[in-house]
Length: 271
Image (cartoon, rainbow, N blue to C red; front, side, top):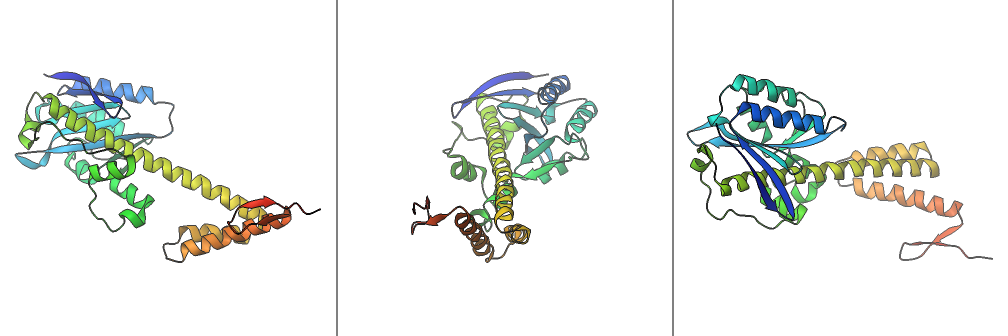
């Protein structure tokens, strides 16, 4: 049985990574996470895996990461998989946890012998495409490093030596392999966290704009704005801008405001 804990420095953060092939250690890590975030309504956990070099249908390592806490499970060398499956199933069925990853559907499918259901899961690439459809919509395969560079400002990170599939199958993972797996899991979590936060802010701003339009133009225009915001046609932006400008102009007239040519609102100083 092998268990190690390492602190991985990355971008002014320390990723605390636990690497284990012991079911008891995995259960304690998961229990600690569930207790720590028991009052949180939504918790994001990245879920990634590396395949067995001798059998692509099986998983060599499974990585879980929440903020700077990372767990690497060496499934190839882990016994008592039944107990591990029960522990993972309790976590995956918890509706408060949203699991994110690159190719997460394939990861879950390969866990079929351990876990049958993951209640909430989403591919990080899909989150990015939803938030930035024009930048990423046509790019069917976007690399993790590419998204990290463009969305988080992270430069490329490379291990000091090339990591091959056989390195992941070793019973004792060396420092470079642990760092490679930890950083990938952490970056995946950070991208998903930013995308979901961005999406939540968009929903709040849309509600505020809806309320503003309803107060100035009435419910008809507010409902029209909501429908326009959900359109996928090229006319969406033009219609949304038209409604916003119309409501802004109505509000300014009521308050005796006026527009300058630059678009700013200034108080009318008429006597």
